[in-house]
Image (cartoon, rainbow, N blue to C red; front, side, top):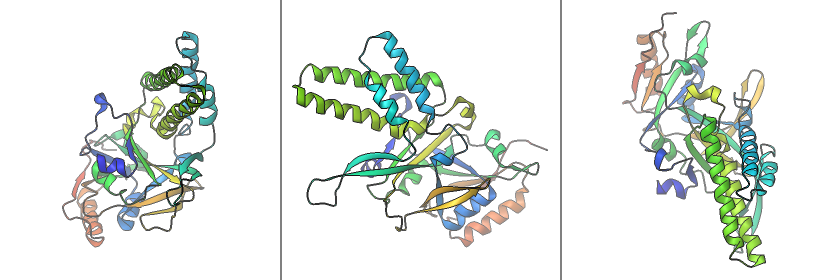
Length: 322
């Protein structure tokens, strides 16, 4: 876990109740074209969060935060007026601005950086009809599902550089759970602000309050994409997010950007290399695909691209006839 923290990789909601085993498998469902692109390029694509299928990506947290805020104001137990400012900042557009220390300079300098968020979606469901349904074409299932461990995926991001942040974890769908988490973060912040108000002089107090507010903003801004509408709960999503500075050197081999086409729209993505030796543990074909032929074709495809020969090839056990 420590080596990932050193490379700016942070797990969402990794408390005692949700303690994460990095050896756990996650599953990426994709189209035949998607799998072919991954195998041939030896890379995976992270889609810009503004171009995901869920229209409420990124903005879903706003209504939740507003509801929690209004409830806390009615309770009158804590001074939570700072949430007004928080709401205004979180309503900003998809390019998130933050101040960072300029580590290249010999002197202590700060710089304003703009960032975009890119998402790679996996599922905790090993063989899910809900996920296969995304890959129905001409009345038949034509998708594929890759199995990978969280740890081996994180290893692919080790060389991206310290200016690139990685966030990973399970999606929360239940509104009560989301509101509870947001409420706790606001109350904790209110209590911290109250404590320093009782012990600091005016100038130090103001600076300390700004730091505490900044911590809350950082938390909600960077983990807002782990809150999704309950309508998507059957996906059982576990996601990986890259926060990429707009001025990042995309000429580096480890990460590249580009555009794909979805429903006539040019969708931006960034692309990260994977290790053909150990990133993929197994590949499953969708129900109804010709099992012997699809397995033979996959074997040839993997061999010609120098992938580990021990990758397990299976077919979905879902008993669909039509």
